[in-house]
Length: 146
Image (tube, rainbow, N blue to C red; front, side, top):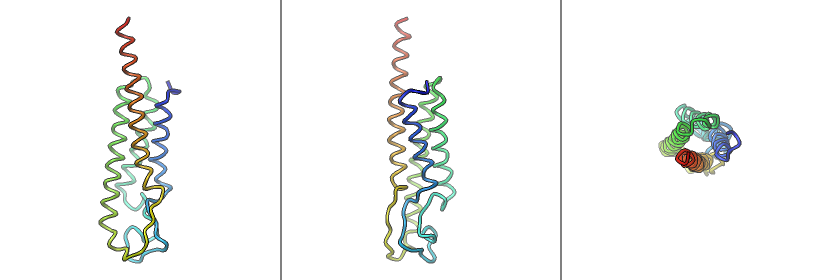
């Protein structure tokens, strides 16, 4: 059913993953000449195609998982795949930042909301997984009673 609590958690997780397309990970006060990621004074998902793909897939999987309420096992798998995509996206984002942070040359780097959205999405996906699993156990216990 769409009105279950896990649907809200999946919706919020999808919004957090897809929200990265509008919010930067980190910013600098001014553009840094010669920097690959801070040339426009902001480190965004759009700076790396792999990040765009991973966070786009994670958001899409979370949103598609909402409508798989009839198949809870598949819904749980979609939640886990979205979690893994978010986790890989965070790892690639940090690695990409560390590779290119030498170009900043002492400029102040301020973290932004985008640095925390993937973590929020992963927490929401785990909570949604917990509630989906709880529903699955309830249905199985009711089947045993019949």
